[in-house]
Image (spheres, rainbow over the protein chains, first blue to last red):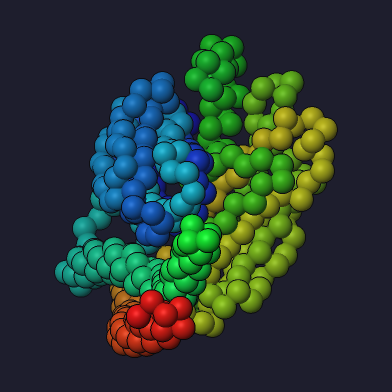
Length: 203
Length: 227
């Protein structure tokens, strides 16, 4: 039982996209065994200046990674002790924009295809070819994900721009009309006053 | 949290190990805390005809023991899934431990929302609930040992099946990418059109109001015998 716990076992990956409201902080926890190689990757998809604060702590509270106002980053570390690792995303510096954050937390290696697989036996050529194709496809899927997120970012900016242009053009047309009509009536009112004063002075 | 663990380690070595082993065995890796009436939403941007499997496990905070109970029957979670058009795809109540599945029929951003429906929490919890969550999308949702057993596949055939599933997922994602790029292009062209019409309209309004102003003032001054 002790060996089971201390040896880094098969891990997995958690890919989550969540919404972080303004002035909020959200934390996620995971129990990790010592010696496991872990990677935390995050990207901000929508909101404001597309930045977020991120902080990763080990079970003793020591800060392993801390970055403020980062748009995208990737951090790899090896767990130095057993326990609960905590990472938090904070949008506390923002007053009204809420952000959408994507993160991918990979712990250890992916579980093997065959749970009872005896790793000692050698793979045939076909099998090792399959394994290398699998790894290559995994990285293709990973690149696709990052591309999708960047495209989502661009698209959200374009849609923002579209709505802003619509509101602004209508608003500005109205302001123009109001101001130009207002100017004329204001000018007229100046001349009307002057006339009464001149007549009073005259008589 | 570290202090509590330390106390347990010193006092009760074995139950702690068992507890950790239990956690590791049934484990959904990642977990987070939510409040009583709090609703947590997660977004999954997926192509169509993609299966999504979510596994969750909840633990309630015990104020007396100052720790999370291993499992609490009677605690329910309400899971709601909305498709990109806002239509509800799945809206169900599950127990304290559950598994929800849905398949997307439209490509886009699906929203998975979880909230606790338990009223017992207010009584002795201190309003904190720990939720272990694991969401698997597309090819990751497949359970290969199960597929091997069901279709009686050899090792090589199973590996080939896994590669086929992966490639299919890549294809679906690329189709979705094409659809998104088209939307992006339409949005950009609409912005372009709007800017063009707006600048023409603005110029026309400016000229017209300028002319109107001059004529109106001229007639005004003539009436006042100033011109």
